[in-house]
Image (tube, rainbow, N blue to C red; front, side):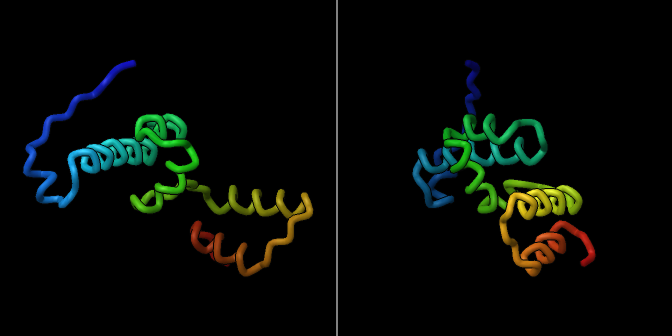
Length: 106
């Protein structure tokens, strides 16, 4: 396994108001989230880089301004259709809100 070493002034942790451990965790998380957002790493790979489980990583993404899932309107509509075909009830306002968020005019 390869490793990345990053040097930073000790003053950065004082300025950020965090411990060295918290600062280093944030640096790893920032790198993992950005690489995931760019499509360079899968969510599992990014989670490994961040030192988290995949579920924890995905649940943390919105806190970093990155959606855990980025579906376009067609993909989203197909997922809702599959769920309905499997017998799940999904209120139309939820579908419409999700499609609006994905950029689809409803």
